[in-house]
Length: 185
Image (cartoon, rainbow, N blue to C red; front, side, top):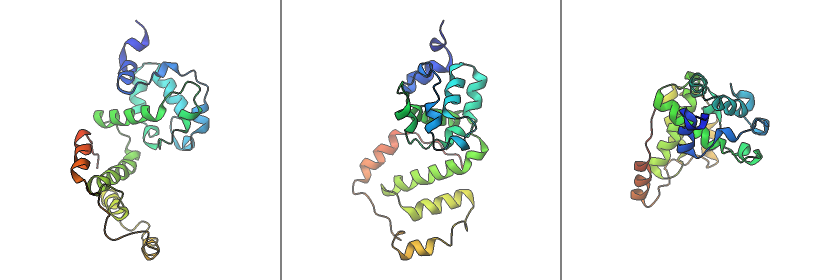
């Protein structure tokens, strides 16, 4: 039985349509990755670890910071000669890490920002900067961080006090009800 017919590789393919075995380790994804230097495993190493179909490697990836540091800029995808959608793969790996409860503790602030962003969009239909910042600060307890920047932004009109709301809140609710969102706060 081939590696693709068993284990998590087939799960990944069925959920993302990404075949990790197509990667031939050229390294262009890692070379073009803007956050490669910060990752514990650059994209090409993540791909190689996944190709092993070893559950220990899979567990290491799900517990890594790399999957949370990926900003889904798609630079890796545009550089990949095989057109492997690594951002899609990283999204799936993040979902799996949340589901299995294996999130790296260093990624908590990233997840807090993500949840604050989604909450802002969920309630207003748009990004409401003050709501985003308030939600993030309450989740991370970094209340005074960057407070010296806020007055200048407010004076320049970059931080409106009231959020702009979308007109069709029912459609917005329908979008969010179709997605399951796991929170780690």
